[in-house]
Amino acid sequence: MKNPDTERPRPGAAILRTALRRNVGAMIAGTVLMGLYQAAETAFPIALGLIVEHTMQDRSLGSLGISIGSLAVIITTVSLSWRFGMRVLQKANTTEAHRWRVRVAACGLQPVATDVDLKSGEILSIASEDADQTADIIEVVPLLISSLVAVAVAAVALSLADLRLGLLVIVGTVAILSVLAVMSKRIGASTQEQQARVARAGAKVADLIIGLRPLHGFGGNHAAFGSYRRVSTDAKRQAITVARVNGVYAGTALALNAVLAAAVSLTAGWLAFEGRITIGELVMAVGLAQFIMEPLKMFSEMPKYVMIARASAERMALVLTARPVTTPGPERPEPGGELEVDGVRHGALQGATFTVTAGEFVAIAAYQPRAAADLAAVLAANVAPHAYEGVVRVGGREIADLSIESVREHLLVNPYDGEIFAGTLRTNIDPSGTGRTIEAAVEASMLTDVVALHREGLDYAIRDRGANLSGGQRQRLSLARALAADAEVLVLHDPTTAVDAVTEQLIARNVAKLRRGRTTLVLTSSPALLDAADRVLVLDEGVITAENTHRNLLAGDEAYCRAVAR
Image (cartoon, rainbow, N blue to C red; front, side, top):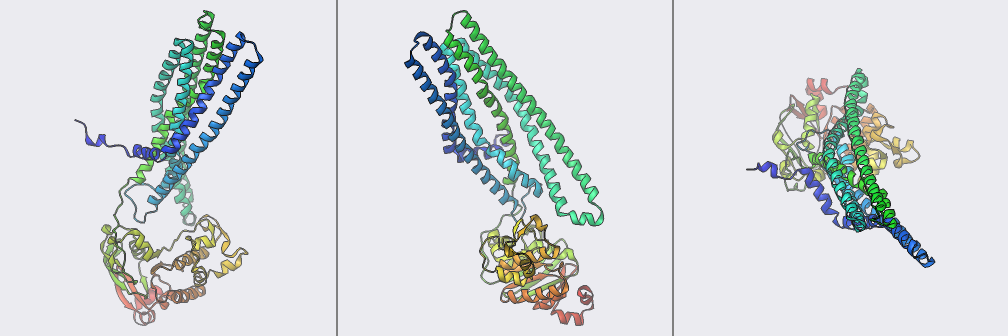
């Protein structure tokens, strides 16, 4: 009795089937055109043999003209069928790779992580290299079929001259493919391991880039570099192994193809010497023996590409088939803007409870920074609802019952380390391109000096991760993006830690003015932001211990005064 688990299709195979099914039309057209190309290529030595045969019997200019015209038709067919066949296949290949890149990226960008042990750098590798190699199956199958057409036409043509020649091609082709099919399995396993190691090296690089400044700060850059070097060395060794296996595969394929071509040529020469085939048939056989090496080479390489595509598909399946940590609900928040946290226990939070009513500007002074970070993670839906105790309600509905899309439309949590993307100031502030509140957001975040500093204004080019901006400029740019989104509920986590006191005072007033009538929660220890809030909640040891205005707390709470006074 078979184990049911072994009967289920592997996820990688399912991905390949999906790719093939979605591109049936393009693959049929590409197969027809590439088959026509291979048939015309095969027809060239056949036509040469016939020309020699008939020219020796009928030496007329008319026969020569017809022969030249036939060769011109064959050459034109070869050129056009290859050109348009590859255009169709490469377009389908590129489109399919794009589809898989988008799907992998969508899974990687889910606010609640899926149950898969992959870092962002590894997911990036899967979304780029593995997606491209998986989509190569769109070209591999038509090229495989068209190569088979060439071998079949050559075998039939040689069989018409002498049955032994045709059988030699068929038996030789089967033997070559049998040997290479065994070798291709090793290539698939080696390639999959190489891709995994390269992805781990890429993830290590991403981590190093993010933490480069802190590493320099405490002198850990040399140790970090050594760690990356070890991972990179592993990837290099595996790449050498893959290159060695590929080299053996290519060399074996070339040697076997050459042996088959030589065998066909020698057999044809022997048959011609024995008088069993004509000179024209000898010319055809020798020409086909030389030509057949190209489709045989292509034909023999296809199993390798199939295994590489399957290995890449298996890696994509790690992301695409991973079960989400939580399944979002179908509901949407009620209109308004109320945010309620009821008895939440997670990390440093020990039963935090508070409510921010619609249109209110509330600040939370967290005595332990870890508690503020954990609260921000819970509100951002980066923690699955079943992973913490208590309830978070947005617009009167529990966040576990809401779809991720509706949460994102209603509630925006801007982290203290918001990413800056390569592009322009404008595209970083307004990624969606709506352009409705850019000017107001720029003014409120005090980003006006950055815009005025450059002749391009909002179209000033920003490098990856904001490398050409200072820390304060990056933080204000991130704040401008959050304000421009104009979310019904906005949560800001330490939005002014990298700016000077004067700028911080202006930002606090501007944010309070811009967000008037909209629900705003700020996790901060900034006196300016605390003073601008309608009320301040004190978060100490994971629970709310005090609630009042900033000035009243300063006057009556010594611990609060020590925590926030600068």
